Length: 265
Image (cartoon, rainbow, N blue to C red):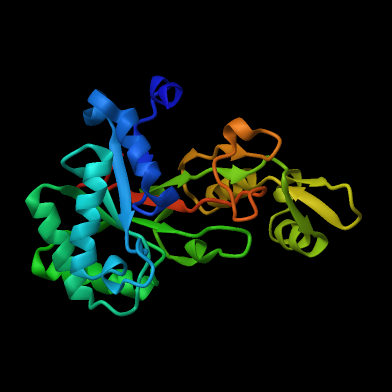
């Protein structure tokens, strides 16, 4: 963390349920007296007490109690960016947006964002917020991988978008078959360099960061940050584990509109 800060890093993203809460606790310890220079983001929604409907979901009760818990763990009285982690398909949109706006007005949250939610819900929520003078979502965090490419069809204006690439398996560490490589190379011959022959016939090792950067660049996105890699062979930089404890995952992209008032740079 100290090295990250020394090299200019100032954004930290966590969630109330990451590693059963220890992630937020560690972030709070690391920030210490330097809290003001960091943009701190955390998330709520996922259940923290299995079997208790009040400990999960997007509803106001979980929203309020989750934020209070996160603030205590992070050792701060506000968070810069508060994410709705996942849509529960039960809580009314107006309850969510009014609840988040109340937290912004209270000063405990500066900006709000949303993750893993259908586009029509996000559009409805921000339209409602705009009409009623509530705080709208300024950040969108959705999956972007070899299989999930929805973000490429969102219709945003590329030059007004800043993309942040989270840690990914790589470089050349993610195994794919001939058909996956053929699909990428068929659509973009320049993607050939992102694939290296594996040790098994018909298998290739793909550099996910390189593929993501290339597709974003071709789409017209000019500002792409992040893109660290993590491999089993490099445990010091292996940020993300699946349940089997040996393989990582490709993190989501965080998109920020640059011309919008209040956007975090």
